[in-house]
Image (cartoon, rainbow, N blue to C red):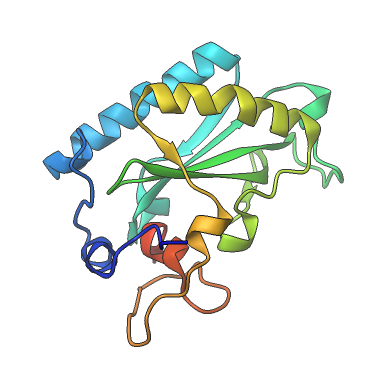
Length: 190
């Protein structure tokens, strides 16, 4: 199977350059990409009646090559398996949107929050396509066609597991083992 990303695309991603000739990514305008993804997320919420918590600001510091969108419902199917005392505790669908391409990935993650603060997952390759909660799996099936209608392409573990060439370095705090194509597309440096 041919790797998803070419060596030149990987270098462009590492240097924060878009790898798509599709609008809005081809424009190289981060505000246009963000506006497109905000419209996408709003459509997801309207279509599925899901609530969301979305990290638009690079986790507050550094640089994130992606936007972390988390969709959930206040419904027992989205309850966390083990409560820990926060007012809000839910499991939900994580969609990482590449800022530099139309690619996105699906994951499952938990968030907890109240007046004391927020506790959340940090995305990593091992989470890609790992959706075990039935309500989250159903939501993912509803979300995917909405994303596709906005020109987004869901990629999975099998497309992103390819290791990066020796000597290629990606500045990321998310890698848990060797660097892969996932890390080229979805990296965060604090």
